[in-house]
Amino acid sequence: MAPPEVFTIADIRAAATANLDPKWAQYLNEGAMDLITVKSNEAAYDRYRIMPRILRDVTEVDTSTTIFGSKVTMPFGFSPAAMHCLAHPDGEVATSRAAAKAGIAMGLSHWATKSLEEVIAAGKEISSGNPYGLQTSSANQKKYIVELLRRAGEAGYKALLLTVDAPAIGRRLNELRNGIELPPGLKFPNIAYDPKSFRDTKRETNSTFDSFIPWVAGVTPPHMEIWLKGVYTPEDVALAACYPCIRGIIVSNHGGRQLDGAPATLEALPDCAAAVRAINASRAPEQKLFLGIDGGIRRGTDIFKALALGADFCFAGRLPIWGLAYDGQRGVDRLLELLRDELEMCMRLAGCKSLADIGPESLAVVEGGVPGLIRRLPKL
Ligand SMILES: Cc1cc2nc3c(=O)[nH]c(=O)nc-3n(C[C@H](O)[C@H](O)[C@H](O)COP(=O)(O)O)c2cc1C
Image (cartoon, rainbow, N blue to C red; front, top):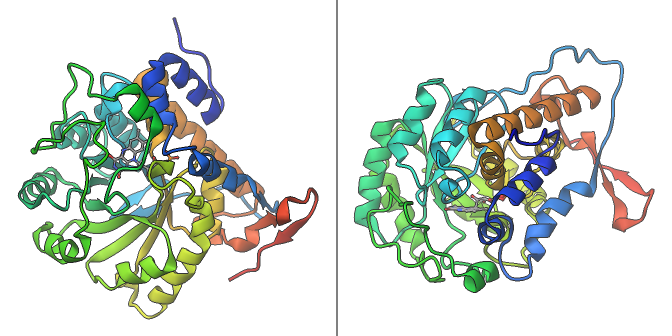
């Protein structure tokens, strides 16, 4: 039977959730503890309004930008997320094909269920242009990291995404209750050490990132950028900027899977963006620190809002997995088509021809939850 026709990412999510085993749907859709942060990541976007503008020539709008040193068709890419094969047998290979077809960046989790080589090779059969980043967080596995980076460099990955918000795994009640184990037939081809059980909440324990970062810079192939994923406060932006090897940071709370009660990423963004602007003011343009965000992005208008609040780039982790569970690569293709259409339409109606035209003055914020009361944001 043909999958149901979908017109929004919410439609894709509903269809995906219906197709998945309920245990895996919970693993994907839920997060830590009472899901306060999971829910607020999405809700935060709804507190902003977009100001329509008129009398501008918006026949053509340009959504293209650059990330990891490569041109991409839009300021959106896939966050690294574990086990895409739970959603579809083609897993990360299908995700990669969709990313390549759309010309967008893809982050691959080291917990991927396909090898990093076959993932990038599948994309390169379609396009040689879209960039890939490889994520890891295993700071206590140095021998493994050296080998992983060698493989990633040779395969053509353009960035190392270091996840720094997981010195221990958050209390994800669904995982504890349902007993998450890798289903038979699936494997972790990129993990060379014993990954232990998924129920082991200490599985990624590492607290040595301060000494780890200079070390990892020394073993990262020179063509790969290093980004930190999971930065949240201006203090930590400043800390990240102390390491000259760091080219980008991603404001992320792991999709609400780590510290429940942490603010929504969109709420953390403006202060982090101000800190990044201050750092970049004293740097040469080629040393610019890039700012990404993930968590709760479900529409093209959400991308617009995050850019208006200071992000250079947006990522999402659950979206490609929902696309896969809905209809394999076709589902991810459709999801990216919707996202692009929504972003382009939003830019047209807000009078923005290019990403550089999007700024805080494009937004208003709903004041104190009072219906009808909004405050325009000032131009920077
Ligand atoms: C099922 C799932 C698995 C994830 N696995 C990883 C991972 O292996 N490494 C990592 O850094 N982040 C992981 N994340 C977090 C994502 O990279 C990203 O931060 C998060 O999904 C963003 O929120 P969003 O799903 O609302 O876009 C995972 C997220 C999900 C939903």
